[in-house]
Image 1: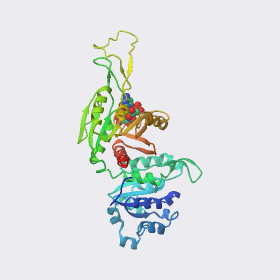
Image 2: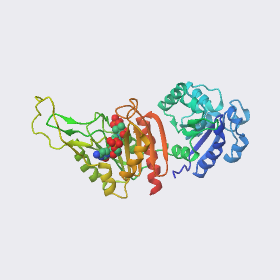
Image 3: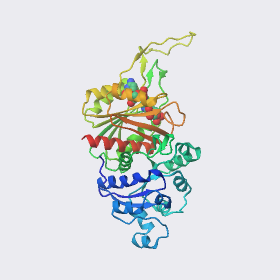
Image 4: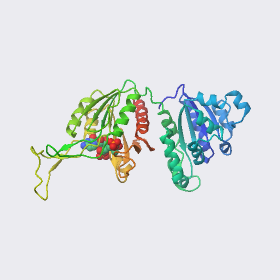
Length: 400
Ligand code: PMT
Protein backbone atom coordinates (compact mmCIF):
# COMPACT_ATOMS: atom_id res chain seq x y z
CA UNK A 1 0.00 0.00 0.00
CA UNK A 2 1.51 3.37 -1.05
CA UNK A 3 1.77 5.89 1.76
CA UNK A 4 0.33 9.39 1.36
CA UNK A 5 1.78 10.79 4.54
CA UNK A 6 2.06 14.60 4.53
CA UNK A 7 0.28 14.84 1.20
CA UNK A 8 -2.41 17.51 0.94
CA UNK A 9 -5.33 16.37 -1.16
CA UNK A 10 -8.49 18.16 -2.26
CA UNK A 11 -11.27 15.69 -3.01
CA UNK A 12 -13.59 17.30 -5.54
CA UNK A 13 -17.08 15.83 -5.69
CA UNK A 14 -19.38 16.44 -8.65
CA UNK A 15 -23.02 15.48 -9.13
CA UNK A 16 -23.71 11.80 -9.70
CA UNK A 17 -24.93 8.67 -7.98
CA UNK A 18 -21.31 7.60 -7.33
CA UNK A 19 -20.89 10.64 -5.02
CA UNK A 20 -21.68 8.42 -2.02
CA UNK A 21 -18.36 6.62 -2.63
CA UNK A 22 -16.45 9.89 -2.12
CA UNK A 23 -17.00 9.53 1.61
CA UNK A 24 -15.08 6.25 1.55
CA UNK A 25 -12.36 7.84 -0.58
CA UNK A 26 -11.87 10.58 2.01
CA UNK A 27 -11.60 7.99 4.81
CA UNK A 28 -9.11 5.83 2.94
CA UNK A 29 -6.94 8.81 1.93
CA UNK A 30 -6.74 9.76 5.59
CA UNK A 31 -5.89 6.15 6.52
CA UNK A 32 -2.86 6.48 4.25
CA UNK A 33 -1.76 9.65 6.04
CA UNK A 34 -3.10 12.36 3.70
CA UNK A 35 -4.57 15.66 4.88
CA UNK A 36 -7.88 16.09 3.06
CA UNK A 37 -10.16 19.02 2.21
CA UNK A 38 -13.41 18.58 0.29
CA UNK A 39 -14.87 20.80 -2.43
CA UNK A 40 -18.34 19.92 -3.74
CA UNK A 41 -20.22 21.27 -6.73
CA UNK A 42 -23.83 22.37 -6.19
CA UNK A 43 -24.86 19.24 -8.16
CA UNK A 44 -22.99 16.99 -5.73
CA UNK A 45 -25.03 18.43 -2.85
CA UNK A 46 -28.11 16.82 -4.39
CA UNK A 47 -26.54 13.39 -3.80
CA UNK A 48 -24.44 13.85 -0.66
CA UNK A 49 -24.72 16.19 2.34
CA UNK A 50 -21.70 18.46 2.88
CA UNK A 51 -22.12 17.75 6.59
CA UNK A 52 -21.18 14.10 6.01
CA UNK A 53 -17.99 15.14 4.26
CA UNK A 54 -17.27 17.76 6.92
CA UNK A 55 -17.58 15.16 9.67
CA UNK A 56 -15.29 12.77 7.82
CA UNK A 57 -12.63 15.25 6.74
CA UNK A 58 -12.73 17.23 9.97
CA UNK A 59 -12.85 20.51 8.03
CA UNK A 60 -15.57 22.74 6.60
CA UNK A 61 -16.63 21.67 3.14
CA UNK A 62 -16.24 24.24 0.37
CA UNK A 63 -19.18 24.53 -2.00
CA UNK A 64 -19.98 28.05 -3.24
CA UNK A 65 -17.65 30.23 -5.27
CA UNK A 66 -19.02 33.33 -3.60
CA UNK A 67 -19.30 31.96 -0.07
CA UNK A 68 -17.91 34.73 2.19
CA UNK A 69 -17.54 32.48 5.21
CA UNK A 70 -15.59 29.83 3.30
CA UNK A 71 -13.44 32.47 1.57
CA UNK A 72 -12.62 33.96 4.98
CA UNK A 73 -11.40 30.51 6.16
CA UNK A 74 -9.36 29.44 3.15
CA UNK A 75 -10.09 31.31 -0.06
CA UNK A 76 -10.31 29.36 -3.29
CA UNK A 77 -6.92 30.55 -4.53
CA UNK A 78 -5.31 29.66 -1.20
CA UNK A 79 -7.02 26.26 -1.36
CA UNK A 80 -5.75 25.74 -4.91
CA UNK A 81 -2.20 26.58 -3.78
CA UNK A 82 -2.47 24.42 -0.64
CA UNK A 83 -3.02 21.16 -2.47
CA UNK A 84 -0.48 18.62 -3.74
CA UNK A 85 -3.25 16.77 -5.57
CA UNK A 86 -6.74 17.63 -6.75
CA UNK A 87 -8.67 14.35 -7.00
CA UNK A 88 -12.11 14.72 -8.58
CA UNK A 89 -14.21 11.64 -7.81
CA UNK A 90 -16.74 11.22 -9.20
CA UNK A 91 -16.11 13.41 -12.22
CA UNK A 92 -19.28 13.84 -14.28
CA UNK A 93 -19.31 14.27 -18.06
CA UNK A 94 -20.51 17.83 -17.53
CA UNK A 95 -17.69 18.68 -15.15
CA UNK A 96 -15.02 17.25 -17.44
CA UNK A 97 -16.47 19.37 -20.28
CA UNK A 98 -16.19 22.39 -17.96
CA UNK A 99 -12.55 21.53 -17.23
CA UNK A 100 -11.85 21.05 -20.91
CA UNK A 101 -13.25 24.51 -21.74
CA UNK A 102 -11.50 26.23 -18.84
CA UNK A 103 -14.74 27.60 -17.37
CA UNK A 104 -14.75 28.80 -13.77
CA UNK A 105 -18.47 28.60 -13.07
CA UNK A 106 -18.20 26.76 -9.75
CA UNK A 107 -15.75 26.76 -6.87
CA UNK A 108 -14.37 23.37 -7.93
CA UNK A 109 -13.88 24.55 -11.52
CA UNK A 110 -12.08 27.69 -10.27
CA UNK A 111 -9.85 25.60 -8.00
CA UNK A 112 -9.01 23.34 -10.96
CA UNK A 113 -7.99 26.33 -13.07
CA UNK A 114 -5.95 27.94 -10.31
CA UNK A 115 -4.13 24.94 -8.88
CA UNK A 116 -0.52 24.09 -9.65
CA UNK A 117 -1.17 20.65 -8.08
CA UNK A 118 -1.37 17.29 -9.79
CA UNK A 119 -4.90 16.62 -11.04
CA UNK A 120 -6.74 13.29 -11.35
CA UNK A 121 -10.32 12.53 -12.31
CA UNK A 122 -12.33 9.35 -11.74
CA UNK A 123 -15.13 9.60 -14.32
CA UNK A 124 -18.58 8.24 -13.48
CA UNK A 125 -21.54 8.29 -15.82
CA UNK A 126 -23.94 6.23 -17.92
CA UNK A 127 -22.19 4.00 -20.49
CA UNK A 128 -23.78 5.85 -23.43
CA UNK A 129 -22.57 9.18 -22.09
CA UNK A 130 -19.07 7.81 -21.50
CA UNK A 131 -18.84 6.44 -25.04
CA UNK A 132 -20.18 9.57 -26.74
CA UNK A 133 -17.41 10.99 -28.97
CA UNK A 134 -17.79 14.44 -27.37
CA UNK A 135 -17.06 13.00 -23.94
CA UNK A 136 -14.20 10.78 -25.16
CA UNK A 137 -12.73 13.80 -26.91
CA UNK A 138 -12.84 15.82 -23.70
CA UNK A 139 -11.22 12.99 -21.75
CA UNK A 140 -8.47 12.64 -24.34
CA UNK A 141 -7.74 16.37 -24.29
CA UNK A 142 -7.63 16.46 -20.50
CA UNK A 143 -5.21 13.52 -20.53
CA UNK A 144 -3.05 15.38 -23.07
CA UNK A 145 -2.96 18.32 -20.65
CA UNK A 146 -1.56 16.05 -17.96
CA UNK A 147 -4.76 15.17 -16.06
CA UNK A 148 -4.61 11.56 -14.85
CA UNK A 149 -7.74 9.65 -15.83
CA UNK A 150 -8.57 6.87 -13.36
CA UNK A 151 -10.94 4.32 -14.86
CA UNK A 152 -13.81 4.18 -15.49
CA UNK A 153 -14.74 0.65 -14.56
CA UNK A 154 -17.10 -1.43 -16.68
CA UNK A 155 -20.12 -3.43 -15.55
CA UNK A 156 -23.72 -3.05 -14.44
CA UNK A 157 -24.76 0.52 -13.73
CA UNK A 158 -27.23 2.16 -11.33
CA UNK A 159 -29.45 3.11 -14.30
CA UNK A 160 -29.76 -0.56 -15.37
CA UNK A 161 -27.34 -0.35 -18.31
CA UNK A 162 -24.18 -2.43 -18.59
CA UNK A 163 -20.91 -1.11 -19.99
CA UNK A 164 -18.02 1.25 -19.30
CA UNK A 165 -18.64 4.36 -17.20
CA UNK A 166 -19.10 3.40 -13.60
CA UNK A 167 -16.61 4.88 -11.16
CA UNK A 168 -13.54 2.80 -10.28
CA UNK A 169 -13.50 1.23 -6.83
CA UNK A 170 -12.16 3.57 -4.08
CA UNK A 171 -9.10 1.34 -3.48
CA UNK A 172 -8.10 1.46 -7.14
CA UNK A 173 -8.64 5.22 -7.25
CA UNK A 174 -6.45 5.71 -4.22
CA UNK A 175 -3.74 3.33 -5.51
CA UNK A 176 -3.56 5.25 -8.78
CA UNK A 177 -3.70 8.62 -7.04
CA UNK A 178 -0.89 7.58 -4.67
CA UNK A 179 1.09 6.43 -7.65
CA UNK A 180 1.11 9.98 -9.02
CA UNK A 181 3.69 11.01 -6.45
CA UNK A 182 6.45 9.39 -8.40
CA UNK A 183 9.54 11.25 -7.13
CA UNK A 184 11.72 9.03 -5.00
CA UNK A 185 9.35 6.07 -5.33
CA UNK A 186 12.11 3.83 -6.68
CA UNK A 187 15.04 5.38 -4.80
CA UNK A 188 17.66 2.72 -4.13
CA UNK A 189 16.31 0.20 -6.63
CA UNK A 190 17.86 -1.04 -9.84
CA UNK A 191 15.47 -1.33 -12.78
CA UNK A 192 16.32 -3.11 -16.04
CA UNK A 193 14.16 -2.34 -19.07
CA UNK A 194 14.22 -3.95 -22.52
CA UNK A 195 12.94 -1.76 -25.34
CA UNK A 196 12.58 -1.50 -29.09
CA UNK A 197 12.70 -4.27 -31.67
CA UNK A 198 15.34 -6.93 -32.26
CA UNK A 199 16.77 -7.56 -35.72
CA UNK A 200 17.51 -11.07 -36.88
CA UNK A 201 19.94 -11.17 -39.78
CA UNK A 202 19.17 -13.22 -42.89
CA UNK A 203 22.35 -12.21 -44.71
CA UNK A 204 24.78 -9.26 -44.40
CA UNK A 205 22.15 -6.74 -45.61
CA UNK A 206 18.71 -8.15 -44.75
CA UNK A 207 16.94 -8.88 -41.50
CA UNK A 208 13.59 -9.80 -39.88
CA UNK A 209 12.23 -7.21 -37.45
CA UNK A 210 9.05 -5.36 -36.44
CA UNK A 211 7.65 -1.84 -36.06
CA UNK A 212 8.60 -1.19 -32.44
CA UNK A 213 9.92 2.38 -32.14
CA UNK A 214 11.15 2.02 -28.56
CA UNK A 215 8.92 4.94 -27.42
CA UNK A 216 7.10 2.92 -24.73
CA UNK A 217 10.27 1.44 -23.25
CA UNK A 218 12.16 4.75 -23.36
CA UNK A 219 9.23 6.51 -21.63
CA UNK A 220 9.36 3.88 -18.87
CA UNK A 221 13.13 4.33 -18.55
CA UNK A 222 12.75 8.12 -18.24
CA UNK A 223 10.02 7.74 -15.62
CA UNK A 224 11.98 5.13 -13.65
CA UNK A 225 15.04 7.42 -13.57
CA UNK A 226 12.77 10.31 -12.45
CA UNK A 227 11.47 8.04 -9.69
CA UNK A 228 15.04 7.68 -8.43
CA UNK A 229 15.89 4.24 -9.83
CA UNK A 230 19.24 3.20 -11.17
CA UNK A 231 18.14 2.32 -14.74
CA UNK A 232 19.68 -0.01 -17.31
CA UNK A 233 18.03 0.31 -20.71
CA UNK A 234 18.74 -2.61 -23.04
CA UNK A 235 17.58 -1.47 -26.42
CA UNK A 236 17.29 -2.81 -29.92
CA UNK A 237 17.94 -0.38 -32.81
CA UNK A 238 15.75 2.73 -32.49
CA UNK A 239 15.97 6.41 -33.40
CA UNK A 240 15.61 7.86 -29.93
CA UNK A 241 18.09 9.70 -27.69
CA UNK A 242 19.13 7.80 -24.56
CA UNK A 243 17.13 9.16 -21.62
CA UNK A 244 19.20 11.11 -19.08
CA UNK A 245 20.63 9.19 -16.11
CA UNK A 246 20.07 5.78 -17.78
CA UNK A 247 22.76 3.28 -18.65
CA UNK A 248 22.19 2.32 -22.29
CA UNK A 249 23.15 -1.13 -23.61
CA UNK A 250 22.57 -1.25 -27.37
CA UNK A 251 21.87 -4.68 -28.86
CA UNK A 252 20.74 -5.97 -32.24
CA UNK A 253 19.47 -9.54 -31.97
CA UNK A 254 17.38 -11.45 -29.44
CA UNK A 255 20.40 -13.50 -28.41
CA UNK A 256 22.38 -10.34 -27.68
CA UNK A 257 19.41 -8.94 -25.73
CA UNK A 258 19.18 -12.16 -23.71
CA UNK A 259 22.86 -12.03 -22.73
CA UNK A 260 22.62 -8.37 -21.69
CA UNK A 261 19.38 -9.04 -19.80
CA UNK A 262 20.76 -12.02 -17.86
CA UNK A 263 23.89 -10.09 -16.93
CA UNK A 264 22.04 -6.90 -15.85
CA UNK A 265 19.23 -8.72 -14.05
CA UNK A 266 21.61 -10.37 -11.59
CA UNK A 267 21.81 -7.27 -9.40
CA UNK A 268 18.41 -5.82 -10.29
CA UNK A 269 15.19 -5.44 -8.31
CA UNK A 270 12.73 -4.87 -11.15
CA UNK A 271 12.79 -6.11 -14.75
CA UNK A 272 10.42 -4.63 -17.35
CA UNK A 273 10.20 -6.32 -20.75
CA UNK A 274 8.82 -3.78 -23.22
CA UNK A 275 10.89 -5.00 -26.16
CA UNK A 276 9.21 -6.53 -29.17
CA UNK A 277 11.58 -9.47 -29.48
CA UNK A 278 11.52 -11.28 -32.82
CA UNK A 279 10.15 -14.72 -32.03
CA UNK A 280 12.20 -16.40 -34.77
CA UNK A 281 15.62 -16.03 -36.36
CA UNK A 282 17.16 -17.57 -39.47
CA UNK A 283 18.43 -21.09 -38.74
CA UNK A 284 21.59 -20.06 -40.57
CA UNK A 285 22.69 -16.59 -41.66
CA UNK A 286 23.95 -16.49 -45.26
CA UNK A 287 27.57 -15.33 -45.47
CA UNK A 288 27.04 -13.38 -48.67
CA UNK A 289 24.02 -11.44 -49.92
CA UNK A 290 21.24 -13.88 -50.85
CA UNK A 291 20.76 -13.83 -54.63
CA UNK A 292 17.36 -12.66 -55.85
CA UNK A 293 17.33 -14.88 -58.96
CA UNK A 294 14.80 -17.48 -57.70
CA UNK A 295 11.04 -16.82 -57.82
CA UNK A 296 10.52 -18.34 -54.39
CA UNK A 297 12.92 -18.14 -51.49
CA UNK A 298 12.49 -20.48 -48.55
CA UNK A 299 14.14 -19.52 -45.30
CA UNK A 300 14.21 -21.89 -42.35
CA UNK A 301 13.51 -20.10 -39.10
CA UNK A 302 14.17 -21.30 -35.59
CA UNK A 303 12.70 -20.10 -32.31
CA UNK A 304 14.47 -17.38 -30.37
CA UNK A 305 14.88 -17.72 -26.60
CA UNK A 306 12.13 -16.20 -24.46
CA UNK A 307 14.06 -13.44 -22.71
CA UNK A 308 11.58 -12.38 -20.05
CA UNK A 309 10.70 -15.89 -18.93
CA UNK A 310 14.39 -16.93 -18.85
CA UNK A 311 15.17 -13.89 -16.69
CA UNK A 312 12.16 -14.56 -14.43
CA UNK A 313 13.04 -18.22 -13.91
CA UNK A 314 16.70 -17.52 -13.13
CA UNK A 315 16.08 -14.62 -10.69
CA UNK A 316 13.30 -15.63 -8.34
CA UNK A 317 13.37 -12.50 -6.16
CA UNK A 318 13.18 -10.16 -9.16
CA UNK A 319 9.88 -8.28 -9.71
CA UNK A 320 9.23 -9.02 -13.39
CA UNK A 321 6.73 -7.14 -15.56
CA UNK A 322 6.06 -8.15 -19.15
CA UNK A 323 4.06 -6.53 -21.92
CA UNK A 324 1.55 -8.41 -24.07
CA UNK A 325 1.05 -7.27 -27.64
CA UNK A 326 -2.31 -8.70 -28.68
CA UNK A 327 -4.72 -8.12 -31.54
CA UNK A 328 -7.74 -10.06 -30.16
CA UNK A 329 -8.96 -11.27 -26.75
CA UNK A 330 -6.36 -8.91 -25.33
CA UNK A 331 -6.86 -9.53 -21.61
CA UNK A 332 -7.38 -13.31 -21.92
CA UNK A 333 -4.21 -13.88 -23.92
CA UNK A 334 -2.30 -11.55 -21.61
CA UNK A 335 -3.46 -13.54 -18.57
CA UNK A 336 -2.10 -16.68 -20.25
CA UNK A 337 1.32 -15.03 -20.72
CA UNK A 338 1.30 -13.83 -17.10
CA UNK A 339 1.19 -17.49 -16.04
CA UNK A 340 3.34 -19.20 -18.69
CA UNK A 341 6.13 -16.63 -18.41
CA UNK A 342 6.01 -16.58 -14.55
CA UNK A 343 5.59 -12.81 -14.34
CA UNK A 344 4.51 -10.66 -11.40
CA UNK A 345 2.40 -8.53 -13.73
CA UNK A 346 1.69 -8.04 -17.40
CA UNK A 347 0.71 -4.88 -19.27
CA UNK A 348 -1.57 -5.63 -22.20
CA UNK A 349 -2.01 -3.44 -25.26
CA UNK A 350 -4.12 -3.88 -28.38
CA UNK A 351 -1.68 -3.67 -31.26
CA UNK A 352 -4.40 -3.95 -33.92
CA UNK A 353 -5.26 -0.26 -33.34
CA UNK A 354 -3.27 2.28 -35.36
CA UNK A 355 -3.60 5.02 -32.71
CA UNK A 356 -1.90 3.05 -29.91
CA UNK A 357 0.71 0.29 -29.50
CA UNK A 358 3.49 0.06 -32.07
CA UNK A 359 5.17 3.30 -33.17
CA UNK A 360 2.45 5.64 -31.89
CA UNK A 361 2.88 8.51 -29.43
CA UNK A 362 0.02 7.29 -27.27
CA UNK A 363 -0.99 4.03 -25.69
CA UNK A 364 -3.87 2.49 -23.76
CA UNK A 365 -3.19 -0.56 -21.59
CA UNK A 366 -4.49 -2.89 -18.93
CA UNK A 367 -2.35 -3.79 -15.96
CA UNK A 368 -2.98 -7.40 -14.94
CA UNK A 369 -1.62 -9.20 -11.91
CA UNK A 370 -2.91 -12.03 -9.71
CA UNK A 371 -5.09 -9.65 -7.66
CA UNK A 372 -6.37 -7.07 -10.08
CA UNK A 373 -6.93 -5.74 -13.58
CA UNK A 374 -6.57 -1.97 -13.91
CA UNK A 375 -7.30 0.04 -17.07
CA UNK A 376 -5.05 2.94 -18.05
CA UNK A 377 -7.06 4.88 -20.61
CA UNK A 378 -5.42 6.38 -23.70
CA UNK A 379 -2.70 8.92 -22.92
CA UNK A 380 0.77 9.92 -24.13
CA UNK A 381 3.44 7.27 -23.72
CA UNK A 382 5.38 9.78 -21.59
CA UNK A 383 2.44 10.10 -19.16
CA UNK A 384 1.69 6.37 -19.30
CA UNK A 385 5.34 5.63 -18.55
CA UNK A 386 5.05 7.71 -15.35
CA UNK A 387 1.72 6.10 -14.38
CA UNK A 388 3.02 2.58 -14.98
CA UNK A 389 6.27 3.19 -13.11
CA UNK A 390 4.25 4.45 -10.18
CA UNK A 391 2.03 1.37 -10.34
CA UNK A 392 5.09 -0.91 -10.52
CA UNK A 393 6.71 0.93 -7.60
CA UNK A 394 3.58 0.54 -5.47
CA UNK A 395 3.35 -3.19 -6.13
CA UNK A 396 7.10 -3.75 -5.78
CA UNK A 397 7.30 -1.76 -2.53
CA UNK A 398 4.29 -3.69 -1.18
CA UNK A 399 6.13 -6.96 -1.62
CA UNK A 400 9.42 -5.76 -0.12
O1 PMT B 1 8.14 0.43 -29.08
P1 PMT B 1 6.81 1.12 -29.34
O2 PMT B 1 6.65 1.54 -30.78
O3 PMT B 1 6.56 2.24 -28.37
O4 PMT B 1 5.65 0.06 -29.12
C1 PMT B 1 5.41 -0.46 -27.84
C2 PMT B 1 5.08 -1.97 -27.88
C3 PMT B 1 3.79 -2.18 -28.66
C4 PMT B 1 6.23 -2.73 -28.55
C5 PMT B 1 4.95 -2.40 -26.39
O5 PMT B 1 3.90 -1.69 -25.79
C6 PMT B 1 4.68 -3.90 -26.29
O6 PMT B 1 3.56 -4.38 -26.40
N1 PMT B 1 5.77 -4.68 -26.06
C7 PMT B 1 5.73 -6.16 -26.06
C8 PMT B 1 5.86 -6.68 -27.46
C9 PMT B 1 5.83 -8.20 -27.53
O7 PMT B 1 6.75 -8.78 -28.04
O8 PMT B 1 4.77 -8.75 -26.95
P2 PMT B 1 4.52 -10.38 -26.87
O9 PMT B 1 3.11 -10.48 -26.42
O10 PMT B 1 4.91 -11.03 -28.15
O11 PMT B 1 5.51 -10.87 -25.76
C10 PMT B 1 5.15 -10.95 -24.38
C11 PMT B 1 6.32 -10.58 -23.51
O12 PMT B 1 7.39 -11.49 -23.72
C12 PMT B 1 6.90 -9.19 -23.76
O13 PMT B 1 7.22 -8.64 -22.52
C13 PMT B 1 8.15 -9.46 -24.59
O14 PMT B 1 9.16 -8.48 -24.36
C14 PMT B 1 8.58 -10.82 -24.05
N2 PMT B 1 9.30 -11.66 -25.00
C15 PMT B 1 8.70 -12.11 -26.14
C16 PMT B 1 9.38 -12.95 -27.00
C17 PMT B 1 10.71 -13.33 -26.68
N3 PMT B 1 11.40 -14.13 -27.47
N4 PMT B 1 11.28 -12.87 -25.56
C18 PMT B 1 10.60 -12.04 -24.72
O15 PMT B 1 11.15 -11.61 -23.69
